[in-house]
Image (tube, rainbow, N blue to C red; front, side, top):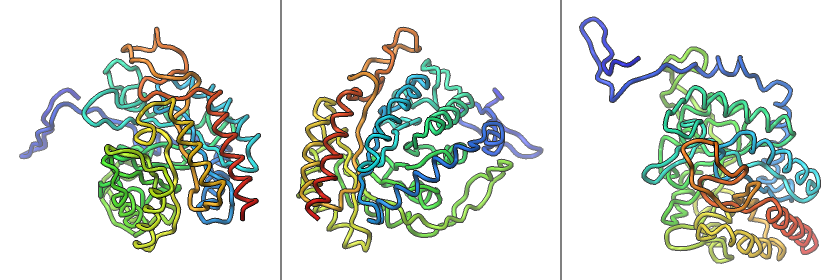
Length: 360
């Protein structure tokens, strides 16, 4: 609809621009069911929860593109990752980072869902379909997927296909996202704020563990509804560094654990070796991962996971306004390490888990 004013007899609402109807979630889920691949998601969520609870002494490793712009390249990455997951299964629980929304500090490309054609056309309906199709394809390869929840409406279209979710640094303070996390059916990592504030992530975990009643949309017919969440006990802090520097060293991890103890929350953290912890230099990700691996090898059991930005090719490229001309398998957002380097990091982390078992 192109008219910016919605009218009813005797009433009118001024809209900011135009609006376009979207299918409500159940329509997309009926058209594109997860089917038998739901078993992959269910089993992977169980594995992640067992690690979070300390029952399983493996390490969660979330690896994949900063954000997906080419579904075919992402599927090729998933096929490669499936091989690594099988090889390292005794020590690592590997989940593919498949970020479909890109939060922006100011402006820029907002991700596959928002602008799937990379040209500013913002065909969100097509983006939602592509995103769900990709998640089903990743699950079909036997690989669990992780994503960041940015738009509170997005989970209705694809949360059934996601094993692990993130509340990002820019939204970790958001009450809306904290309440959203309380209703999501998968473990959630709250990242520390962009300035490095870990307390914001701890507060997010506390809030998401509680029950909430919030307004939302019925997934069956799109009508306004009250959503009553059960609370999410599987939230944890993700240390990703900040504006003032990294926070992956032993002292930083210890400080985060103290905040969790004061809040009465489980002492468990994940470390993101990219972003502020690497100074956004992808070449530093292996160095940060090595420092984290040394802590694990020395017996640290509070570090339950590591996240890295990885793609088929190293580095990044500028988006060209369309896919034609782009280097296949290379990020158009943050620079990533390539598959060779990613495997080396996984080998190091797997060895650290083995050493931790010996220490214990």
